[in-house]
Length: 437
Ligand code: SAM
Ligand code: SF4
Image 1 (cartoon, rainbow, N blue to C red):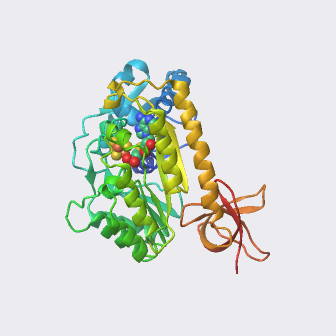
Image 2 (image 1 turned 120 degrees about the vertical axis):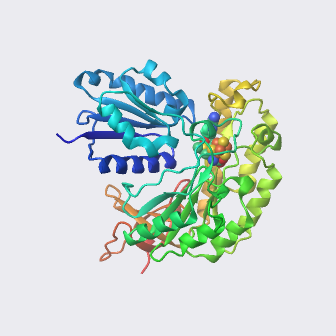
Image 3 (image 1 turned 90 degrees about the horizontal axis):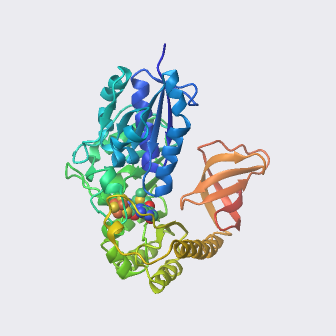
């Protein structure tokens, strides 16, 4: 009988793309992917531990399906919770037989053989590796937009963050291997490529051939590729050359995600972010001086240990000053192994929640203003779907904004196609408009 698996992914785009590679590996090993836990012989969770809530969801899932072990089903925990908790997972959830961090996915095939033989398997010892997980078997889940990992791990060790402990040492793929993958994707019909890494702009080509802006430009020049996005950029390593590449290469999208975390230089130093408010604003000025209208989004943390009211106000004022097109704001979540755990924290939970809500409210006002400037513009969208209930199509602009649109009679948009849309209305989180001839 054919072996079957079910895989559920939690967390960021890196995890979503890791799962595409894991699925490809399992299919190549003769497994078949199924849509429910009930149908599956092997149940895998690709996990996230960036905040406490994400981590708890995995243990709830494992507890929910524990009874299915009696039917001979096997369970595996992959990703950041696997790496962080290690063999402790076997104690907390004894029905689990595989625990594997992302730095060990290269060895997944051997681990599958072990668990099929009724043994337990772990992949936890590879965080110091120089190798990246490259596979020709990636099972891409989107037909037009494809992800390419260019750098794995992180060496920055921000005081609040688990990633360097869960994803291991920073290591880049060669530019030749990235460009080869981009070329194969273009041949397979993909028109949008998203380059991924915890800090893509810390990229260091092991062959020494290309800088990050050089690689961006080269991917943007692959025949057939119409859009290139990259996420996430770290402000410390963000250079003018990146802005120059966006200006010079039409396929590079008009969008930079540049997480700031806090608007206070004192808090930024405590977070070990390695830039000040002023240095961050200098980078924003480079982006604003570009010929293209580049949208800027960010990540923010409310209630970092010891953050004073005045320091929090500095974050609010930075949100105004930069004029972000969008922001993900999070309440600080204490994480195992991180230096921030040992910092004195006088900010009560209720105050952290208030700050988070105030930050989200301020960003909503700023996003509303930023979106309003598009009314009257004609923007190109990639068609992503249709909202039948509203009779609207859903597209995405180069600036990464959702643009819902109607079409004149006689035009039939196709998914993954590109259309020009006149923007007629704007909202805090989207735009609306109509296709122009
Ligand atoms: N490498 C990216 C950077 O440095 O900007 C960020 C990657 S991290 C996976 C995504 C976001 O999660 C961070 O930008 C930060 O805002 C948030 N985050 C990370 N650790 C957190 C924590 N302990 N509590 C709250 N938010 C956190
Ligand atoms: Fe985490 Fe900082 Fe690395 Fe980003 S740069 S992944 S926030 S340690």
